[in-house]
Image 1 (cartoon, rainbow over the protein chains, first blue to last red):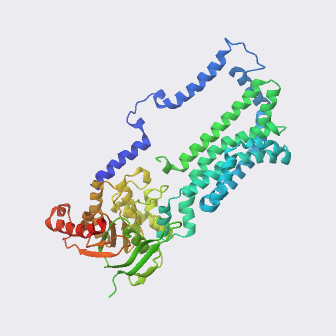
Image 2: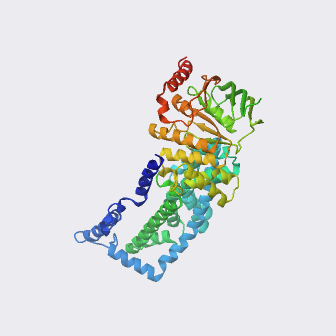
Image 3: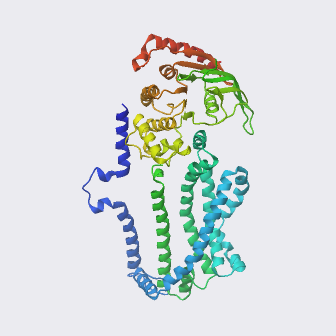
Length: 281
Length: 256
């Protein structure tokens, strides 16, 4: 009897890993990657439609651009090294602001989750900040901290810290009391509770928070540089716009979009690799 | 003569914040012999699970004496292990790693842990599932892991808190048979809390009926059915007489 149950479990378990590909081994490339191809198709169609619409609508490159010109502008920005220079400049405050957001956000979040009263006390204030368009504070930050790395880093920090606070707090609150009792009943110490239960419970929440925070941090980079910069990718977008060099402006915008997708998908991939136990949840 | 597990006049009152106190155990007495399989049945909320948690060392009683092997219970210890109703498996750990949890907390080197976990995974019939995660297992398989984990530290006393309540009826029957086999192999003292009279009779040497809250020991029923027990035993007149007697004793507590 035990073996019957066990074997049934194997079949169910394997199906989860191997998927339908195993039951129908002779599949074409198209069938195997259908979902990915469908996704790509919509992108290609969108670009094609954008390009094609100017066959009927008159085109004025001072007001709009199209994919072929954007691609040329992009190559131009790459060959002169401008694009990489701007990205390198922007990445410095992004790095500082984001790392500070992780450290401060996770610390505050864990305290808010662990200490109920601190949680009740701070929650309305934090929610207010999280829900409000904090970019409105950007001019003020520029007045205080200037247009250098520190001003930009602070705006990026302000925008990306809240997802870490809320997710870390939610993670701590979601820790299963039963698992705490399990470890305590086996003679686990306070340190064991942290290492074996609390940290593994909270970590996936923080990583999920990272995905949200990346998008907000990128907004922070752009807004900070619109207001307060003399170089950087956001400044480049604003400047090319002012110069009516819309092909290059779009090239910068699309570069930022690609970076956003790569970063968030990278985190998603890392999530699957690091937390295989969450796949089925 | 002191019993192996002996409780005398154990009292416990919960005082939850913003609510009135709840008396869980009042003048609770119990004697358990070494190597015995004792089941506790009682109405919902009578404090039977609470008593297991007291015995486990997670909850301190307000008063009374509770000893194991002559020594008072002062906190959690590796001489006792619990099998939880909701399994309590760490979802980020594989089957093997879950089974080894208690050994890891004791600081045992990985090689020795592996030897023990392999033997127990084999014993509960989960060979081949060592690197599966709990979410990939059925309920019955999860509780096998829970049982293997409890046995890993080689405790003298196994505490089982409605361990099969979350399983479907067939899996439950199967697990009862498996548990008896493992109990006979591992030679542990077992305290088994359940709602099911039939399950209690089938497994136990003695069945204790508890009163409704605050919980007290009401009556003890010796189960003199021969071992090893088989499924057919459940339809014998002796079995049904016991079932009826225990049910009568329990009925007053549920309806009154």
